[in-house]
Image (cartoon, rainbow, N blue to C red; front, side, top):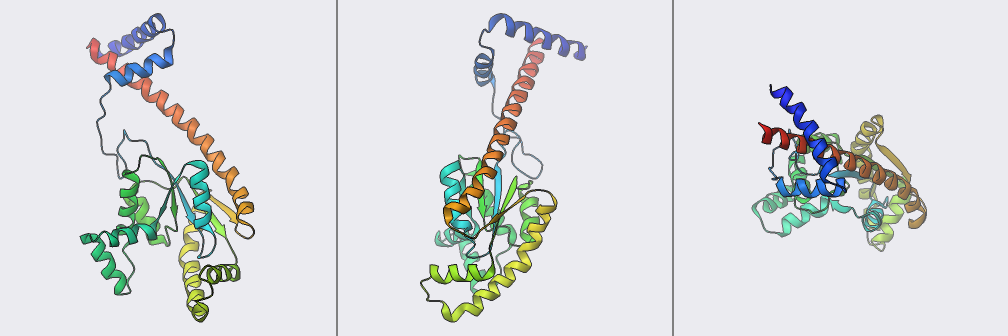
Length: 265
């Protein structure tokens, strides 16, 4: 009986729509907005099922690879929100919150901030934003970071930008960026680069195997590097719009059929 009514409701809705609505798409949207009630249903290990799923890109590269500069250009040109894990940690510390105090104490002790802490700061920033497109700069730094991100967020990045830059070039850029005041710390910088390579490359290789990594030659003028980035972002923008459009139409159709079934029952 229920199956028969469901089928009947579908036919009835199709008839109603074609008879009453000359501008079908516009009317249906208004109709759904009028009767729909947003109910947040927690999704399995991630965002609620009625929220728009965030579109995320990891942006990776060593210190001095230029990823921060390129993130600023991408954010400005394509409307992404740029999230830096380091900036989020510093902001939390400066807020004088209990969590911030704990983060500061961890850093003072020379320990690494737990992955879960950083991921939850990223998640909070995403959930509090009105945007749905995010560049996550300099994270994950290790396989542990990656696993924590996917577990807590319940999602992988849509794609990964990897700014590939030779070590000598990165050292030169960092020294110039700091106006030569860290000459006596070159050894420290090189150690940082070695640690970065050992921890970060497994993350890059993991997503490379999944076909998600876009390797950018990070040597040259900023604008020339950005020219490599633009076609990549543009292609995902097109795919994202198409995917969103299909999902909205599917949700609209399912909702309307469900509404008429409820009315008839």
